[in-house]
Image (cartoon, rainbow, N blue to C red; front, side):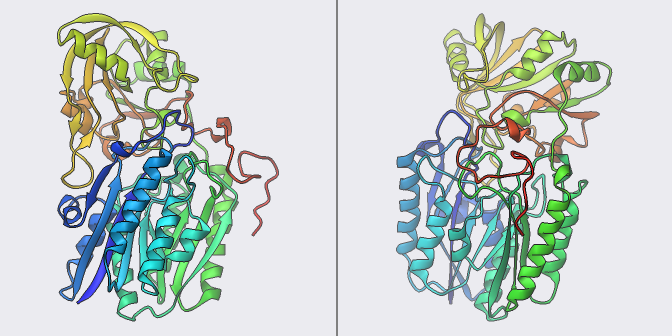
Length: 489
């Protein structure tokens, strides 16, 4: 029997989030519990397990898994060190390993640890030795020299919004098996570093220009000797020393080919760099457009995206709706633990004055004082995206504010589909206007229902206008943060 080790550590950090992520905000699993929790679903971990289970001659060796259901701020020093130690300890408890699949996101970072995934990959490589290691990874990951030096191939997501997690795990697992079986004898990787941050609708792979680059990656992977190819655009909100975009191509035994293909992809991305910007609409115009549009308006809030590393406590769109006297009904998610606590004190059916929003990111948002009616209180648990483990938004209160509904939770919740809202008894499709705290991921669910989709030009720690963000560690010069940036390749 061949023993293939798997481990998972995923978190997408927003460095400009004012709060840090603690150990207890993560799910943690060890050993066989991982196989049960990730049985089915759309995660890269399940995709890898699914392929490995097909082989009668392969024993899956699950070690450690840590993840958050949403994104968050930099991981606290003690929490980050503990998770890395637990991961490494679990790996070192296993021996006679023939191959490894590390399921990583790539955009994890701690207060004092800029490259936790690289540290884990280095420790795993040191323990298992010269055996194949592959990793499925988000195309928004941060690719460091250390990480790349310790894995044989990275299989990046090929869709944005992301719908191919399972398939990406499949690809990574098939690659590691083909390496283990000797079909791929000498994987070599070409990588081009691009001094560029990318954001915007042209990155949507089904409709935007970026899709052309991804389809070229897929052609490379399908070619003879092709192993893995991806365009990694990083996470613009993870402010670390190796933040940038990259093109990464792994082929069997031909370094010159790998380098040339990576360079070809990099040239494409740089040539079209002026397309990688978001189209944002002022709130006054959003209100006018929604008033004059029948059916559902979905308003993306990329600046306060709980899918990208924000705090989730922005009330900017809600304030805009009230200021411009929006007359229809809106469904508004917000992270506000103090408001939730007060709602639990007064109980369902009570009316009271509350300060909504601005409880976390106090530099960007002023609380909105309003009279609300408490419609519902829940524990905030709802269906998770990774198998059987539920998502946890903390205690949650549903308020009626004039004709609008505000769903406040103690912790961030994913608002890219209806799951969280339905768990609180609210169907977003019954409203005229819904806020999705996401740049584009919500389109997977809402595209078929929305009469129009708009993106609000409001402030936030994950603003699509990256020039407004206070970078401290990212390498410079960087497009579009600086003028006259030369690509260097």
